[in-house]
Every structure is written in C-alpha cells, then in structure tokens.
Length: 290
Image 1 (cartoon, one colour):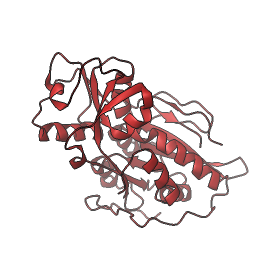
Image 2 (cartoon, one colour):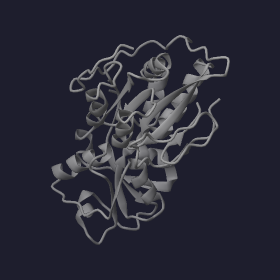
Image 3 (cartoon, one colour):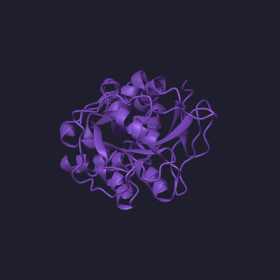
Image 4 (cartoon, one colour):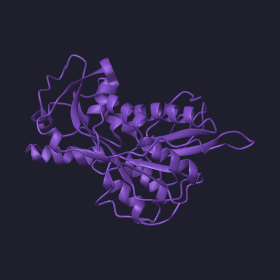
C-alpha cells in the first residue's frame, strides 16, 4: 500500500537524489512515495506507443525479505499523476513497491549518468532523456507517453493584474520562470520568443513545482508553469491561458535504465505507464496524448 508522498526539490543530483521506500522519508534532495537489452537508441524519432501495450501480468513476486523496490526518477510535473499510477501498479503487483524520486529532469538525468540506482527515468523532454541515452544507459528505446503545454499561474485574485505574456517583460511585476536548462524553462523560452517578449524574471526555479510554489505562497505576481500544475494546484492558484501555448508542447518520455537494479520491475512499470489505466490517470490530470 502506497504511503505518504513526501517531496523536495532536486537541485543537486550529481550523486543522485535521495529516495525512500513505501511509507518512509526521503533523504535530502529527493521525493518519495512507496507505492534488458542494452543499447543507445536515438530519441530524435521516439516511438509514441500509440497503441499501448496490454496491462502486464504479475511477474513480480517479491522476495522472502518483502516486496521488491522499483525506483522511478520522474519529472516534478508528474508528481500527482505518477503517485496515482504507482498506487495502481502496486495493486496489480503486490510483490513490488514503487519509489518516486521527483525533481527537474536535467538534474535527474545527471544523477543517473553519475550512477544513481534508478530503474526507470520519466523525463519532461527529449533533450534530457537524450542525456541518458547518449551515456548508453537506456535499456530500450524511450517512448513518448504524454504531452503538456504552458499556462500562466497567478495567486488567487490576481493581485498583480496579470493579463498575458507581455507582463513578463514588466520590471514592476514579480515574475518566476523555470531555469532555462530544465524542460519547463526551455519551453517557456520558446513560447516567450514566439510572442516577441523578453522576460524580466525575478527568480529562476530548478523545476516547475518550485515556480508553482512561489505563486501559491504569493511571492510572485505570475509564473509560467504547465497546465497540469495549474490544475493540480486547484483553488490555490488561478490560471490564465496563453495564445499559442498549444504550439509549444512538451513531450514526456519514459524508459528503463540499462543497469537497473530491478530490470523486470522497470520493464513492467514502463509497460504499465502506457496502459489504458495509466493513460486515464494522465488524461484526468490534464496531460495530452502522445
């Protein structure tokens, strides 16, 4: 049974973010919830997995010491959806628990390359997934399993009177953006450039949940975040849709790590994320289909 989700921002993952098992607490820099051919495929033309595999059979029996632990490194924007998906996976596989380590995709990828013991990597961009692929650490071709787009998040009541992207160039406004090296920051740069806006951010966050938190706490007038993050925040923020945002989408890719401590568990989780049950969760959270 999946325990309490505890998460922190992953800002320095050279040795890999901390993780913890079901019901445990995570070490600093990580997020947790209990719940193999080798090769270097190219992510330029990833398999979208549009047909989706059948739900995996229960081939994860656990050990005499208890369930096996499958460690999933996942982009921070997947926090809520993957928490639910991990619960569903564990219900199908009582011999396994899923530990989610959540943070910025670029930091997570760096941790995997540095030798962190991850079984699965779910990235918010092809570029950050390519870091793992180019290091020869992808067990199979990563697949696109979801898409996302950006939206402006403002505090309840919109005290900064934000109306659109041009406000992000107003030095009188307090603005949060994701750092350009992380997927939400790269997507924000593309969207702002397309709109002809040169932003004047007051803070650059290492993942999208950091930017969202600034809005929730009323520390900024606005932030560019994923539409799924606005939905996940519920009544804690308000969202402003951006013209052209649907033309700047983010692809989410998932793949097993080639030296995964639990290769069968990794393959089973990757399969499950492409199943109809998982796609229903992702759709409800606001993610688009691949």
